[in-house]
Structure formats: C-alpha cells, structure tokens
Amino acid sequence: MNMNQVTLPVINMEEATDFYRRMGFLQIVDTPHYARFECPEGEATFSLSLEANQYSNGAVIYFENTELDKLVLGLKKKGFKFDQEPMDMNYLWREAVLHDPSGNKIKLFWAGENRLNPPWRVEQSA
Image (cartoon, rainbow, N blue to C red; front, side, top):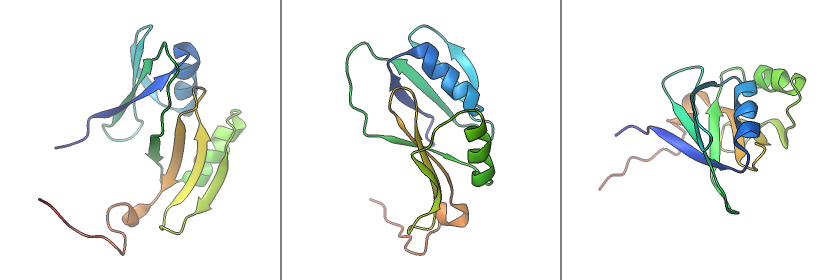
C-alpha cells in the first residue's frame, strides 16, 4: 500500500486555499466544499474539506524540505507566522511549526536518513 492523501478540515475554504497556495502548493481541485493540492516535489497530494460544524483536529501534517531554514525564512518574508522556528529535535529531525487559518497544525521538517532509518528503527509486521 501507498498513502494517497490526507484531508484537513477547514472553516473558510477561500482563506485556506489562499494560505496553501502562498505556501507553494499547486491547487488541482477547486470546489466550494473541497480543494486538493499537489506537493511541489514527488507525487503526494493533500486536500481540504469545508466543515460546517465545530470540530477538533488533533492531527499534524508534515511537509519535508531539504532546505528547511531557507523555506521558513522565505515564508516569513511572505507574512507567515511560526509557533516554533526551525529547531533540532531530540528524535533527530529539524522542525518548524505553524498553523493554518483553521488551526490545523503543520510541521515543516528535514529528517534526512533518520526519517525512515532512525537509530532505534524496528521492523515488525503481523
């Protein structure tokens, strides 16, 4: 299996789609209740779904970039606000944190080899 996409709930589709386009994603589906984006690298996509009711989303969406610090600096110049500047984490990833206009948590990161092969990697299956 390969993961196809993640869908994030949003409360204002116009505001949300503008946010993600300004981040550098290509919008490939545009409806009043659903939008889909293509990542600049690879074949991954993600989507937004308009929610009419209050919701709580504890999920975190991660976007990897080899030049994390440069990416964050460029986004800050565009007016994006970060909750956490790029920082080396104890699990060997470098991460920056921000939220989209609907409150969805986004982590921009670079993990390199440690993303799939951390020193504590295990291989377990059914």
